[in-house]
Length: 493
Image (tube, rainbow, N blue to C red; front, top):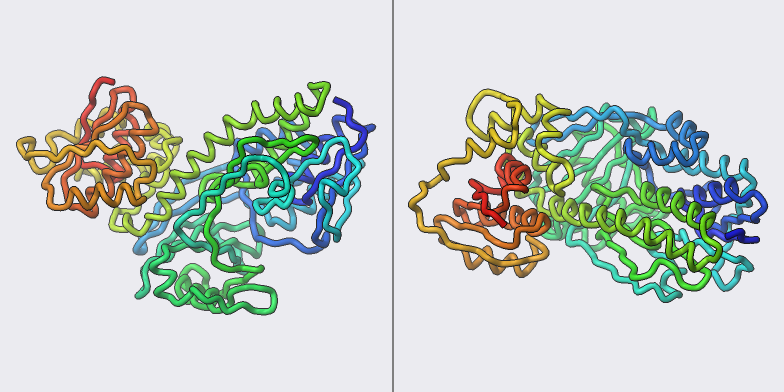
């Protein structure tokens, strides 16, 4: 397809990147980005870009990625609980200020010949364009005005984004217990003198701390919450205050759409889909969308066919990431229940929470952390055997409590291991000395079964066995080391 005019609604990373790539691919096309905000005004703090995303950006546009890397800051990752710290090295993870990222993308878009217009609100109906790319974010007015079959799921936990005027040494996941409950920060450096501090908590803690009614300052930041959290995380902030930018408590919204296009309008990034910040970067998804959309426009003769090709290519990857992100969100929303674990076992739980990091692979990249976790699990000195999964499964027999203990069988298929259906399962198992959790043999069902088993261990106080097929033995082993199950049973599917 050779469109004469393409309009992009939204001057965030996805919209700017799509505009540049399209102009490079089709120099004769007039490409205009319409952003309702001012060019100098942006919201947010740092953006993280993992190695996989960087590889895709390099293949699509090496010049832009080179400047992004130059402006970014590499960091490792640590987890801290009760003063104990576990560190995982990551040579390719970078953080970059959102302002810096936008500046790089704006400059490269203009260098390619893209026209950038700021300060006016436009709709698709206002624009004379063959294609309208709606990159206007999670609250997309374009999406809401069209026929996209939008569905939104709202999380239970609450979180806010803020920053601090110093650079952490590493990314930090840290939990702090207070008289109101537990607050958790996801913090990371993104500039020589700046760090992002994302803080989340459960609703009970949020209410107990008195945050239901925000105390907003002139720029719309909940100043009272930031003052309170600065005291909670004083040890991590090194005497610095927390910085707001329209910062207030919210719940994560997962957006899904049955269709990503409607007529000449096509959705991109958060306008089409969102994935929880703990595993899915909206920036990552939007920029990868841009690569696929521009390729599809160049390979098909008509907009409808190009949009269909774009969606067919991107939807499987997006839906996979959304499912990983859903599991990750549920894990973080229930994080305070795990702070009794040694920090190395907690790091294993974190890395395996969504099922996308095999235990053996994690052991190969972080043998000190996994070795300590295996030793803690088995009650021996730190060890990293050649076959981590096999070794873990060998340590699990016999079952704690003895094999002759009568087991209560739980055969309940739940979607959310911390939702109302799971609440009923846990309540129904109260008083049981031993529970065996069974169910379908597919991987998704097993991962959910392990999460439900964790609740049964912690809340019902039972010795819990989880059944699963031999081909998923790595997931079962990870569940044992992470404290999701006491023992496992390999059952042929």
